[in-house]
Image 1 (tube, rainbow, N blue to C red):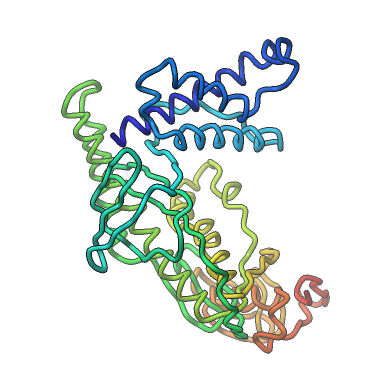
Image 2: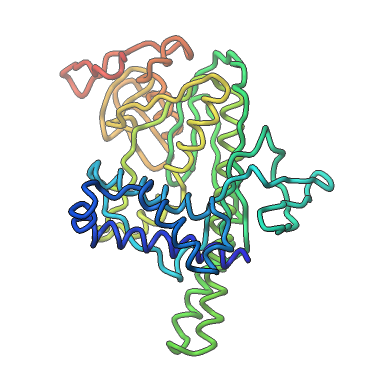
Length: 376
């Protein structure tokens, strides 16, 4: 039943996209108005009276498919990409209203999720609901089906955390904090990457179109899903821990997409950056810190790894290695990523008040210059 609901959502989305792409001039000429999700919703209502299998699908699933397409077109009109058709081999997912749904727990981990049309499924709960359910997004990947439930949660009171921290996101150490803490991805993720690489080699050795290739492809999909799940779990743990302890967090404003563009001799670096999940971590941290009344600041990343956090001298020679920073001017020695994290914190509005770090004069060689963004 979930497969049929997802297929109906994909069908309505693609039909509506085709109508908007190919028939909008004809529609405007005949009716004197443009195609919107409202006009398409009326046509879906008419189609449900003529197509029996479409009438069996919960109405809210079809409505959300039209709203998703409308959102995609709004993004396109704001200089985004043109919406693409959803193919059957892509992501299997749909969204629906939750007014007629309920989640009944058995214990702390297991419960029953009741959906429309009398469908009830056993679920493993990862967290308790914080309020009334608004909508449910159900998706399937190589590991199985999952449900993401959107709830209406009352605004949490501000915790009033005064501590501020700067975070440097790197390749050798995933996260380095200005207080000296360093966090790296778990070793289990490395093992999962090896299993994924092994599955990729086996898939490459299989004949195209064979049953063995289909099985190898399914195994590779599951290994890839396991890698993504393990990484996301670790990022959730780290972002939650930081949000609980600090009221102001400073990060570098990194353009990850530009940093990982294909380039000769940097494929390994690109893979390492993407494996860290820098952008995902920032997204998680933003809403978790905001829930507790804090704020995330983004600063200019220029020369944070070459600036001495003690005297402010900027010199590429001070970066002795990936892990060691030794200032060529004052001799200050520290972990390179921790030194960068302190500079990141100092550049943010919370730097002076939250850490006791004041703006410093930056020096490169004999000519002293003032870095304006250090005194933000």
